[in-house]
Image 1 (cartoon, rainbow, N blue to C red):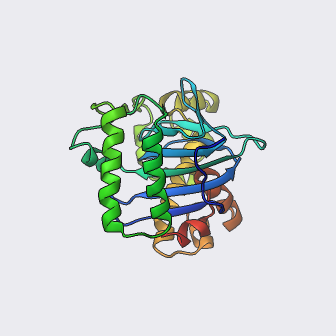
Image 2: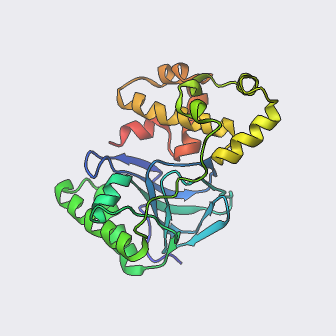
Image 3: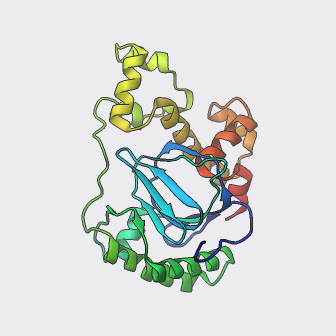
Length: 266
């Protein structure tokens, strides 16, 4: 039985102008898997009901109800939920800069992924409720800083983040603007190798398949376009999706909410 319960509402995505662009996701009875991906932020998840499964490159992490689950920026992970394994949770997406600010300017790395700390869980739960109800954000920023500082000092390590494997071979491809119209055959040909070897090398260096990596890049790019007020069809076509429905399906797969839900919760 969970120690506290999430709000009885569908999944909602929140974006805020304070705390260096803090974002959050509230989900109830979620059972749709997230594919392998990464975030530029720390993901700090309060697990209310069920068991939140996270598959890292080297192990499977199980976070039961009442615990806090953390992934570091750019840490490749997937969430293999099942249809009969509903999970309710609230995730804070905290920028690297804000976390360092909370930690007196020191870098933070979380080696411990699951934290069982009832008091810290309840402090974060109260903050999630205030964020969801549009409380006084000026006061909230101070409370968030204090709470994240506690998390960093008690459970984090004061060292630089491990950014994973070096991406030497594919640096130009990964940092360029090829992700909108990526072709596996053309990419493999440009490196002078067959597509199967390209797939193996790409996943070895990045932790993701080319398909997942470039779809994720397009979804991240689309967030900025949605924030600018562009309609779904224009965003979908501009980024190489078949239509708005195709784009919306992939958006929800990676974020947990629809594009309309994302734009309506600012």
